[in-house]
Amino acid sequence: QVQLVESGGDLVQAGGSLRLSCAASGSILSINTWTWDRQSLGKQRERVASISSDGSISYADSVKGRFTISRDDVKRTVYLQMHDLKPEDTAVYYCNADRILFREPGVGEKVAVDYWGEGTQVAVSS
Image (cartoon, rainbow, N blue to C red; front, side, top):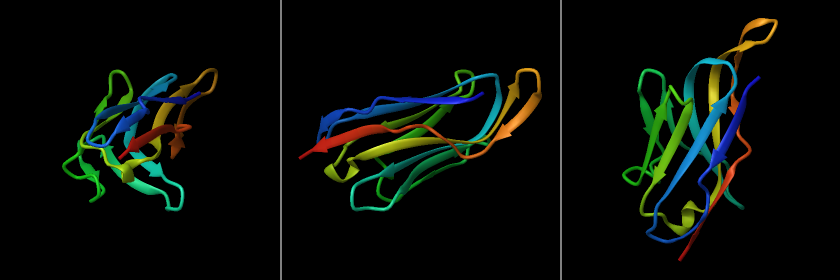
């Protein structure tokens, strides 16, 4: 049993900041990789940022220097701190947890892969 709950999406003016959060709930032992994607109308889904359990981080070129991804493995939560937001950042942002090791009651340990949240809307006005 795993659930991802996203929060932090909002309306903001260009140049503003937002912090997105995505928390995993359940009897989770570990999460290998956290990822943030975004989807805008008329554009294909874009990988924004990712962070692995070894601390390695990657960003899309379009957000480098403005966005920061981080994780808290005690709270089982990933964050995306966004600064200097631009209208082109407007999108639904989705978090993904890959290779979640968790305990199924009465069964034992299982692994979930590519587990997605439902998305949170970020809208940036010019």
